[in-house]
Image (cartoon, rainbow, N blue to C red):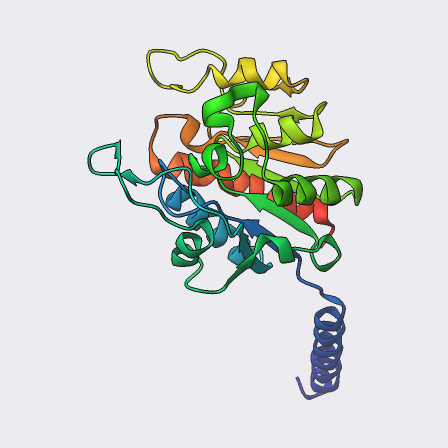
Length: 254
């Protein structure tokens, strides 16, 4: 037993040295998350944003949140599902609720400072980041959202989008592959299946995926998942977002 002690000590030293070397070489992915307000029907879908942040934290990513400093299209009373007359809110200020105040104007997002970007869904993506909710395939996209998508795409850095936000990539990048889930409503399980037609009209390819899956466009490094495009249990949506985040981190090379 005494003869083994020098060998054990040497093994511990080697393990410690290896751990130190690994730690020194490790570099966490720097991921930008772009929000569109706070609330499913007029801003960011909060469960989606939270799931993205949890999975990024689990992946040891360094996260910075951004939102455009613009007025919301309108304000929705989420209890009644109706617009509130005479009320206005700012997208950046509302997004700060989710970010716990740690958020920057989207105009400050520079692709050189990040390894990937992720857009949660919620109607804010179709109302505040674009006019898709009103104009469909003929929508305009916020100039900073357009710039960010083009910059990350040109740099070959991964772009993650969930729920309705894949329409942003379809509108700005054109010939990309995305998913918003299934292509038929299936008795109300996929209530927004009609979005597929707009995606195709924009020149993008739609790929059918279940809610727990993500689709990876390897060529363009665009990763998408359906999330609340499906009327299903929350944990399944959480799992699908997890698949998207893992693929984004994998493509980032970190």
